[in-house]
Length: 76
Image (tube, rainbow, N blue to C red):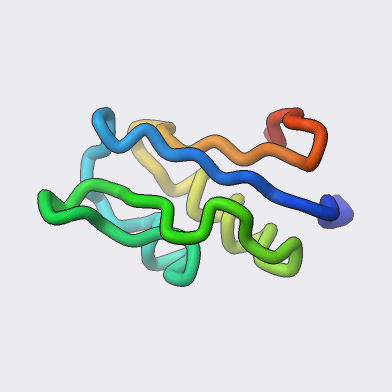
């Protein structure tokens, strides 16, 4: 898969299980809030982080992370 020119990352923290897989896979994109739930710290990461962001998304046991290309199409 070629990297899109722009990424948008969204996480539904209210459904987070706080497993930490997203932070381990993409620590410059994901952090945690004061309760330990996922927080997106870089909603538009560089396209060269695509593999890490997709790994973070795929590691989420609750599937609360969505990744979109520049046109708003979900990257599945």
